[in-house]
Length: 117
Image 1 (cartoon, rainbow, N blue to C red):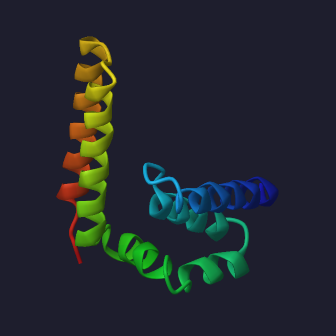
Image 2 (cartoon, one colour):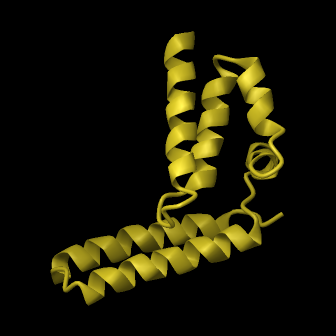
């Protein structure tokens, strides 16, 4: 199982790093997932990720308090609005827009229901 968790953590880190340049791919949630996976497989990789100067504070906030920082909430909201706006601009079918709106509103509700600090 350690190999599975290590592989899952490495894949999460890799996809999260791609999210740095692709704005709609969530980097920090993937790093949180990677920390979880590494916590089950590799203390060294887990500690490296949790102590990382950029991602570590977000991971610790989530681990300790289930918190999402306010700037991250704002960025997520703008990204979600942009994705929905793009769907409208592309002329996506109304049924798909309704489903997308319900899912995106659920995601926003979850994000904004978490503590900020």
